[in-house]
Image (cartoon, rainbow, N blue to C red):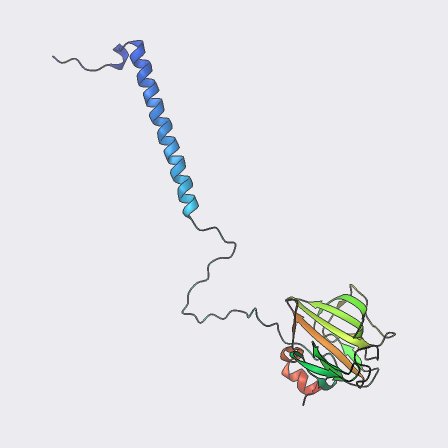
Length: 214
């Protein structure tokens, strides 16, 4: 009769060899498992904090990142110089052609200048060319810039939080660059640090009520 294999009956040396072999097999299996799991994780796309958008046929509306919302006009008057960064505009004061990074709204000295939207007054300074200037930072990476203000009638200070339509000051004659022009507000708008045409972002209602545009 054939004798069955019995581990207990084996010599001590054989038992040790068997134990070492089994241990090596277990370690090898564990290593292979770890390497495989790591390789699979590397092949996965990186996690995103933004959930994937659902596809509903392409009809879902998304907010535009190329254009901020519309605003109020900062003053009541006639637009005498428009925004022009591509074609130079003639400056009677300097007697030369220069790009114009804002719009000029002509009005009497002392006419009120108001904030175009809610925001925080981040700068008040004397611009070397445009005179007394107030800058307001708004949500959406928008900065509005009001220049040629009267030195004595600034109604805000740096750090103030202002509401849309709040009085900032009045039109003065502090602009060195535009002294030969009629009294006006020099107004600029920046979106993400880049100069943009303010007339594109002032609401049609505000244009009709406050501005004369030829």
